[in-house]
Image 1 (cartoon, rainbow, N blue to C red):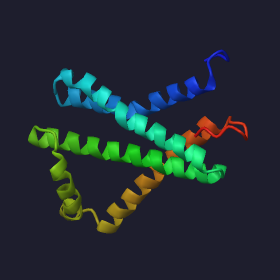
Image 2 (cartoon, one colour; image 1 turned 90 degrees about the horizontal axis):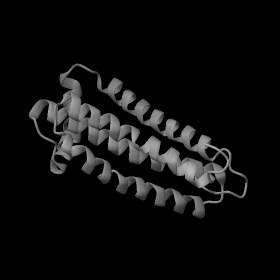
Image 3 (cartoon, one colour; image 1 turned 45 degrees about the vertical axis):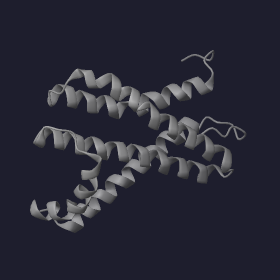
Length: 164
């Protein structure tokens, strides 16, 4: 984009592109692979606007409340990773439930899945320590990816610019 486009517009466009990568990938799998109705696409894309807006508001509050740049980046990265991680977890549960049971997992069933996770890991022959290490590595990778993205996004900021 050229210099005529304000920095905030470029940042919001980058955030939108990054935020909607996961829902788009999910919807491709949901509609194409699992043969679910395409009528679910528009409502889902619209629904994903709410967490995007909430994350934007949270990042704005963080950017205005925390003066230390490193701490601000770390907290923003953790918040971003939490939103992305929760979305990713839900998408995986939906794809599994639709693939095996033909329906979207209910909110009330999700805690049961988490309580049963250690038993499932053991039943498929994966050592619990390896599963735990894998989960921790996945979470750390997600936080690191969010940190690198936000650092790159805000890296061109001047010392007085606190957008994050």
